[in-house]
Image 1 (cartoon, rainbow, N blue to C red):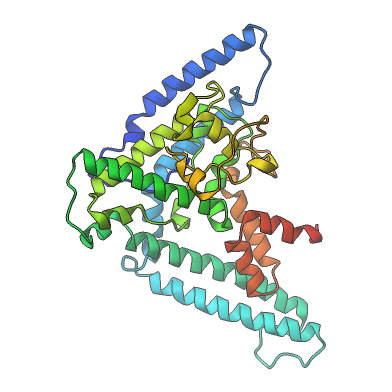
Image 2: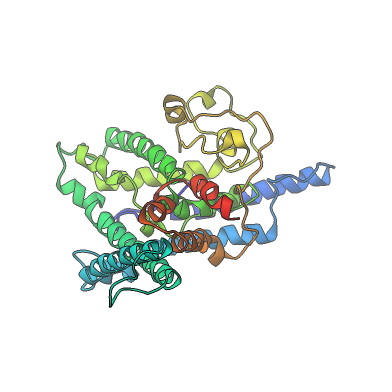
Length: 373
């Protein structure tokens, strides 16, 4: 489950309206757990733990604030909006050029070739490597912010609605049904992308960071959506679905996904052939080898069945990350993957390696880093 975009300002945010229902459902789930334990049941990973629940709720609150705070912070460097947008692009290009020069100098020095020319970034491999380390991180950070802010601005539902290819479907049942199914289809691919590209995993990994699995886990949401690039849900507007219907579909999708974060429900019978369920989504949160990067659907599980990412639940799920971070600090939960990625970029010796740490999957980074460890 993820919080992909800020809804239209003229549309009621269903996920906020549903907040009392979230807490009521968590209360019922907690009561059922206490009754089970009182009756002699054994503790499970689905039980509530105070520090874990507090971290999840804190991330949920921050995720509600982020869509309002992030645009204001990034506006000065956003193309078409901020006065420093061109400065940011220039900084990205300049630091990339400096880093490239430092890479060349370091490689020449390491091969024992002639020293770099006067005015070069350094006269020893160590100096050049330090310049490349700092420059590489700066270039990737500046370039990433420039691209993600420009992408977000260019792909808003309102902007794509103005460029729609067909007439409006109106605000009736047909438009809403098309929006819900269309949103869910795009959500599947965006969710899958988040598990296969590290800079997107850095956004989404927050949601997988808990080693427990209950309804509070559903609220452990990302706060750095502004640093990602998704297939825009506004694409639905090109086909006549109004932005208001897109925003409503978003709410329906996220509210549906709330209830599947539980161990209190085992299976839902034949409906599991079509719908996502607690059993299917437990698999998605598992670190078991057979469960990794499976079951990406939101409401419908048919996308996973169609595109080869479905896995049934047949062994006890171990929740969390393949390498757990062992913290309940919301700031560290939100930032640790970015910090690790920055260190990986800083340790790289060329652009292929740097960009691989950003764009390839998190598994690639762990395997590539392993020999040094």
